Length: 338
Image (cartoon, rainbow, N blue to C red):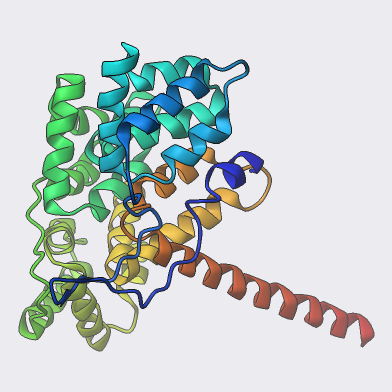
């Protein structure tokens, strides 16, 4: 954990949630990332400083950290080009030779473009002994249509195989169908909520789950992978009016295995994507040991999207956890007193 405290001390920090930037008289949307474009950016200077740090005796990791986490991804890509032109070798190759362990992993992650990083994560999740289904669902369920298409293109370019073929080969059954549906990049992204459609979808889902001949998984996959987050939230509200149990609970009762986890994660993302990631961070750091792979994956991939919101949700989780633990201790003390 000490490594991550060092590396991400400039990534994980508070930003004013009400901050807006006015450009030509128009306000830009609020920014919820924690890494912004570095002012007075000079790729030649950065490339030179990185080269000196890599070649110095013992490797100056502090300089490497300060540069990589204070430049956004677009700026890092420019540094890579300049570094190769001046040093005569690829920056990622130089860092891989100079660094070790998690410092190497996170540095290389920061140097990849978002699509290339996601493609790498998917390849890693499907190449190991046993597929890491959680990583596949996390990526496919939280990326935009445009990002999904970019991931597929990057995967093909990097590994010379279609992503869909890998998914078919490494997964099975309804889970495969759900992943391939998300890879079609047909999710509605217009942001508008259609109440009538939500009512219709809720009815379809209710009937699909209450069917006497067995749950109609295809109906759940079709609706959950094609509707926008706000639209699904309205559908969940309509579903609650039809059923005595919530949709996640219904999925838990009717389904088992990878498809259950997949569809429940899609529901979680629709309700609150930052909370979905915050829960993953909490699980990665609770108990004995830390899952560094999860920390690197989330902190790097969300640092220019919604990491500020994720950190707020994480604090909320820890605050609630503290309240529950305190209440429990008080309850135990009360019993002992009695």
